[in-house]
Picture 1 (tube, helix red, strand yellow):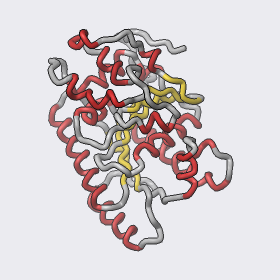
Picture 2 (cartoon, rainbow, N blue to C red):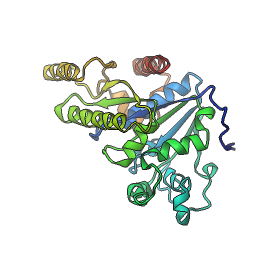
Picture 3 (cartoon, rainbow, N blue to C red):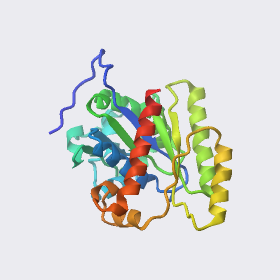
Picture 4 (cartoon, helix red, strand yellow):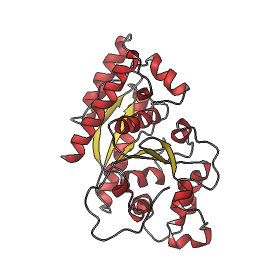
Length: 283
């Protein structure tokens, strides 16, 4: 079903873009945003690859994929490292890749990914670039228009790998001081990567206010303060805590699965976001 091949030296055209969704703070809707963003791109006819880099596997779960053992992104990353030959298995990328939906493929995660940092601790190869090199090895950029990565709410090696592989990062957050601190912590990691000079620094594709309660005056005030503290980066339109969001997630569907008018505004928001992201990555 899937055709993967060794990279060629002159493969530099029509490269897909890698977009990560990150925040050190959990519970901000990061996975929900990644799921719907992937569907927004697919709805526009883009070929999308979703990579779940969170050991909790919530991104995979939204696609109905759970409880995988051995056939996850973790084993593929281990298999890609020559220094860990003793841990290699016969698992191929075609064994792991799942045709999730029309125009969307998925490389799922599992609990085994929680051991990633410990497993690669002793290798000599740059541990920060394992995911980036994996994507290059299988020329995934040439096979997909967009690669969407959902990252864990941590600051460890998985996050560094994602940031080193990504062209740009979207930062979902809930307008409160805890989520704001999570954003600042991630930004510090990006700055650290820039100082290491081992790869290009991902673009800031903007912040996504989520679960915004329009009924609370304090929520508006908090959001304005956060906007001021984050500087000139793009602030995408806030997502309110709509019933439609909860309904779609409960059914493991994106907002683009529904033809009802009550979903049109959410569909518009994600479509506008994809357009802004593509424009920023092309600049």
